[in-house]
Length: 431
Image 1 (cartoon, rainbow, N blue to C red):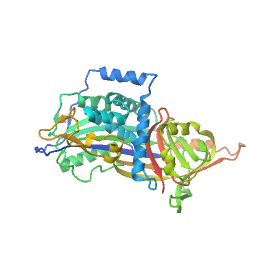
Image 2 (image 1 turned 30 degrees about the vertical axis):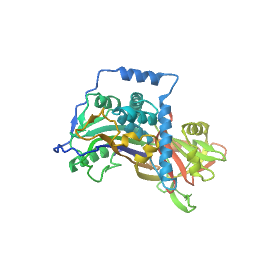
Image 3 (image 1 turned 90 degrees about the vertical axis):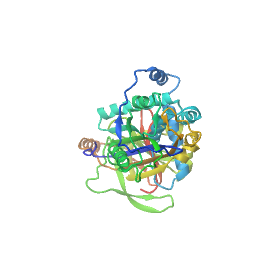
Image 4 (image 1 turned 45 degrees about the horizontal axis):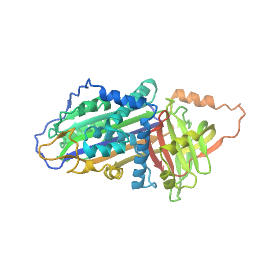
């Protein structure tokens, strides 16, 4: 895993969907074990979806990006902007994408409308991103992994459809069978989640699952990336003043350096965009000049975000930005219902029959939640430190650096610069 890697930014997220039966179905206990999920040789769906991805008329990543900002704004609407936050819309997208493969009728229609693509096309987008990020991990010092799993009970009589094979093919999801409500099952699932997040989220469940739980779909995303140019504090912690939404000022640990970066400095917003060493992923921080974070986020969508990052200029700046560490646990049932995903939560109307059925109860979604964590600090590598020293050319004549000071509440986003797909987003109000 990542124990020996120094971290400039480390963030992880877990999204989980719990599917239960409306009625209890007794079953003998059984330990979890992996199920063989041989990949189907029928590639018609994959070829059809690839035609969409390769089409010049439509970029399916746009649907993912639109979902990301819609999802983020719904969470902010629910939780407000005065608290620190971190979430991964991408993690939720993967979990919902897996769910959509087993849905039929109105349940499937609502999921596909929220995803912005039908279930097959969403699966191809997710598969493509997993392949891209796997290559990025292999070819750079960045670790970006996406893991998926389906845990199901013997109560669920698997359908004759290829749903679990499609989960394996498109989402590389492992399948595990056994009674889910036992302590051993909880420990097994927590161990899986902890391993896939490099122990950043060591405990997904604190209590045993309900005995009616028949299926659990989980997505885990782990990012460990290093800045292209490290922040060297020479053994001393840099600090800065920061004002929270209530107007209270405090001294916080900070990333401070004079360097060439992409920046935004207008009457409306001050922002900085920092590169990671892989030359693909970026970190953006945007602070509204008037302090109205709620108004700023209300107008932020995928088009506005693209405009912001595209308008950034390259220049020599004196950057001051807080370090921060944020954890969150978010219940998503109401969030998803507000996005139109309603029938899946209805014990009587949900149609998830492509996963399977239970003898005397309908299968429906009982709970969706996400746990996430992000750490941003100045740690770097020896090679990156050499780059920083080389940039400090004290003999060169140049204009005074442009001050970019992020000292009030700000929005941040870790994103893929090739597709503008957000990996993690949030608000820092009190670092």
